[in-house]
Image 1 (cartoon, rainbow, N blue to C red):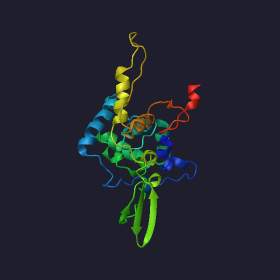
Image 2: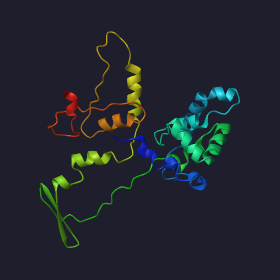
Image 3: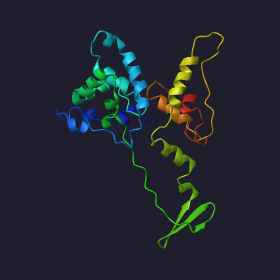
Image 4: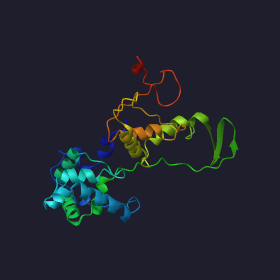
Amino acid sequence: MYSISNDFSHLSVGDLHASSEPSTTAVLARISVKRDDFTDEDHRPLDAKIMSAFSAFRKLNEEPDLSELLSRITTDKRLTWLKPDEAEELLDREPSIASVLRNGWQAGSFKAVRQLAILWPEVQEQPKRSVVTIEQQDDPSLRVQSLGMSVIYTTLQLCHNVFTATEFSWTREYIGDASVELWNHIKNHYGSNEQVYANYLAIVQSSGMGKSRTVDEMSKRHFVIPMNLREADSTGRFIGDHLSLT
């Protein structure tokens, strides 16, 4: 299963004992304009929620715990979420971030914090695709003629193979808020109603539409024990957890 540590591994806190010297310049680098998809309309409601959550400190004219503040800011799905202890480690290693946080707290705006490149997940390079001219196509194989060389790709080798596509999709950035809405649905309908036999729900959709990925994304912020109750010798993705059936 994909772990938050994969996202967190590229941060400067990844090796706290490697050096005691902060890397201020690199840490304060801004995310590129191309990747920064936050608009001012996005920042304002996010800032309002954060200021509301820490309103007690504002009333007392006190500064909140910066690690808690940073953790709350990074809960947005576009950023790498830092748990409070991870945020504290990062601030200990890179104190320059604390200044950005304090400025944001005073101004009531954390736009500059969200623009710190160190808080964004790494982007994995997409595999390079070769551009070739298709001169002959036979089913179930595809013959490609390019630069005088003939290459035959069987259907099992094609990128659109369903299994390959499913596995490859896990390496891409998750898009959408289905995982958040799934959790909201669970919270809104879970209860101790005696007339309800069991608390469960079914997620129904065609293959490859993101059912498993949605649950996996939800597990990054909420405790989940995934089990695939499929026979060990059955076909399809993913492989069944047959031991859980015994």
